[in-house]
Length: 175
Image (cartoon, rainbow, N blue to C red; front, side):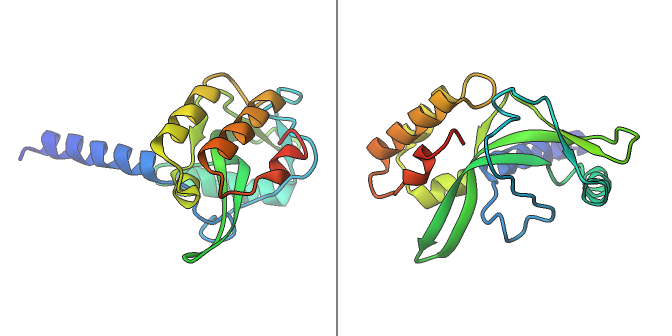
């Protein structure tokens, strides 16, 4: 096998791993995590970015830059939380790529890439949902961001495809 063929093969393997990879436990292997409360402002377009505190933002920016080839900076929403025979699960259902920059005033803006939402395969595995549910979710997430209507649609479809999952909290707010 030539070097170029080997590199192409490794690149294809990396792409496939990335597609199937996901956040299994938000409190597990995630190096930098930050939970927000209240109304979703980034994905609904209310705010273009959120400012991270200086120390946290500085550490995250340095880590993100150093590990940009093997790790991703993600913004996750709609968490699947619960306990199964395999253990405790706390993983976001939907992932968006994010970017952090330094603004010069010791604050670090975090921006979310509104297009290209992807499903967290780890969360889908926990839900034990049929493939049809995954396709329905992909159709819902075709647009930009995540609106209250989209969350409602996801909740309705989850009730159809995953009747064993309790998703009342999903209906308590936009996100």
